[in-house]
Length: 138
Length: 397
Image (tube, each protein chain N blue to C red):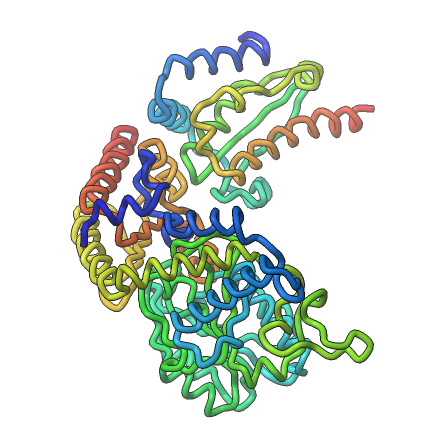
């Protein structure tokens, strides 16, 4: 299963092997189709995202769990990649590891700022979950 | 028309791109770039009350530019041409000025669902009732829907001459006649229209009109607010500062256009805009319009060959703007896929949420053509759209 870092490195390695934006585009399309449909409940809607995205983040035993959905396949593919990276990660690991996938993906350069912001919002949701849940436990 | 020479007039097109985002911003023509650069090199002195040759030279250039803009839109007087930072600022200036000059609380403003946000949101900001003429399910606007909303309490009709989504030209004549009959002002957003057709202010007889230079092959950050002199004279200035005041103690303002032009203007931008207009005049607006008409017909024919593609634009009486969706594919994904092939289009809500809501669409893809585009570029777009469809069907299976 590896660490949060190694899971990101694995995805980046796979993407590095794809030399064009088009192939990376297909990579995220594949990821989007690799999972079933997630919930489209309004309570999980990411506000301000130009393509609608629904993300649910919760924790059990101080480990992160996620469910993602989007109208946009490229965005859903990116969110699925995030889920692969964070799913099952401990709070400690989340708080001690950087999320660097976005800096290493060629196709991300084609994402508009609203969709990049959406990814940042999801990251914040994950980090918030570790803190809110920690407070709940205390 | 020599297409190669025409394309060579736009340095931006030297890049390996297929540029179909002209409704957002047109490439800057070389004439504008050169003149702006020369202005900065030789004439960039502040105007008015600089008693030296450079200042006077600069002032003369701005004055010439104002006359050129006046002639371009056939306004009656150059004092009716107010330089702004663009159409959005023009609309905000006139909103602020109208709301601060008059009490409209018992009145109404009429606008439509097809407006760009810049001609919609400002009218929501006052306490005046906003009446919004609805579009049809295909995004078209029937003039009767607007006429029905105008009554003796209407103070203003704010309407586009051309939709930035569908490209439809709006039949303004009867709307303006009825508005004036009821004593209302009419403000026309000409941002899209002016890129494709001759805008004749005196013929359409609107009270205010706005447009941006960057949609007519000029620079960003500069635009125009046209206002009938007798109305503008009666309005309060929307901004305050230098170069607009006659007597500070008595709060007396300079005459038009200075009253509406507080602070230092984007002088180089104004000179650049005038150069772009000169260049357009030199090419011949009618010739360019004919070329765009031919391209529009071509893209309509070719787009009908893409399975699952639905157009929200019409072939007749419209600018060369085609908005569409493809069944089962998000508009932003289409745009991003096209971007991998360096095809530049716009996607999403296109700054027209009320219209998109009417169309029941989360987003659309917009291809906006200009006279320099080619049939080969359109073929490349169509083959790319077919490929994204094919790619999708691979996963759908």
